[in-house]
Image 1: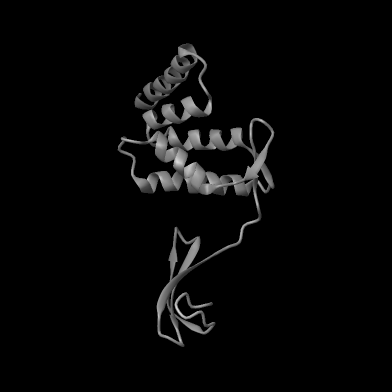
Image 2: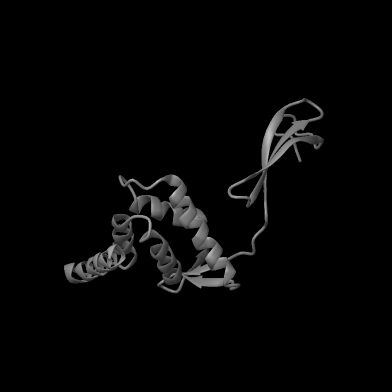
Length: 156
C-alpha cells in the first residue's frame, strides 16, 4: 500500500476491524519510511451490475443513489440514518442475490418501497409519489388508501 504522505510502498498494519456491518475491513496502517498513519478500507470486489432505466438506457448500479433517494423521501421525518442505510443495504443485497448482471429500475424501486413502508409511511408515500410518478390525485389517493388499509389490518 502506497503511503499518501511520502509515496513509498512499505507500510504495516497497526489495527484491523470490521466496518459497515462486516462488509468492509478497516485497517490502520503506518508507513515504515516516514511513520505516517493512515486508514484504508478493504471490501469485496463486486461484479458490475447494470440498471435498466425506463427509457431503455443502462447505467451502473449506485448504492449511494438509492440511499440519497431514501434520505430525500425521509427528510424531516423521525427516521434514523441507520434505518435508511439498512434499507439501502438490504435492497442491494437482495438485487445481488438474484445473480443477474442487469436489473430494472422498477424492481429496485419496488424493493425500496417494500422496506420503506415498514419504517415510515410518510417517507414511503413520498418515495412512491416520485417513483411511480403519480399522474393525478386519484392515483395518489389510491396509494394512500392502500397504506391506510394495511395499517388498520396491522392494528387489529
